[in-house]
Image (cartoon, rainbow, N blue to C red):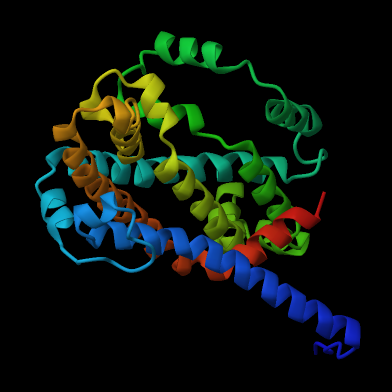
Length: 296
């Protein structure tokens, strides 16, 4: 039974905490609302700086034009495939590495050496150029797998899941061994079901990482037809910013603002999948992080 603290300090903390989190939540929501308003506004209103949080002279022209943008949907399909396959690869390798490392040195010989090897990669990195050379030497350059395999084993996620496994009672494993279960059976029938909160949290981390990443596509892919959605959007936005309005011809200015509403529609649509998925996994988020971080 949880005893609630009704002291003045506790109540004051709750009030301040609620106010601060409300401000943070609103500050995160307002840019999305502004983006949506721009995507639905008339291009002249956008050009005149009249749009804030509500569409001005609403029109769905940007979304109609977006439906005709085959490159956008091709990039979106690549991002979906990358997120699904990449998340499966991440979780499979995280589980297969975290579970052995969660065992005591008595059960896993050289466990401490392996753990040191894993931890070192968190603090020391060869850098971007050696990583690019490895990707090129392994034949992954300009391929779909260059977006997945270089990020296949996120060490931070391995540590979170390893600590979650270590928090599980050893008596469960001992009882399973007495009943004749193999280590793989213990992993898939006992350890993984108990670790669902942590796995749900790491699933969210992996999905966000793959969906939001744009830099990998920029450096590993030579063909724009292979770009994931975020790299495609980066190209659209960066391309629009290469010249200022003062350097453009008058006939280009109207096109610029027409594209501005289209880009807003593209960015807003690109945020929808994560907005849908996040609430489904959010209930596991806090429990997965807390339990996975308390045991050393």
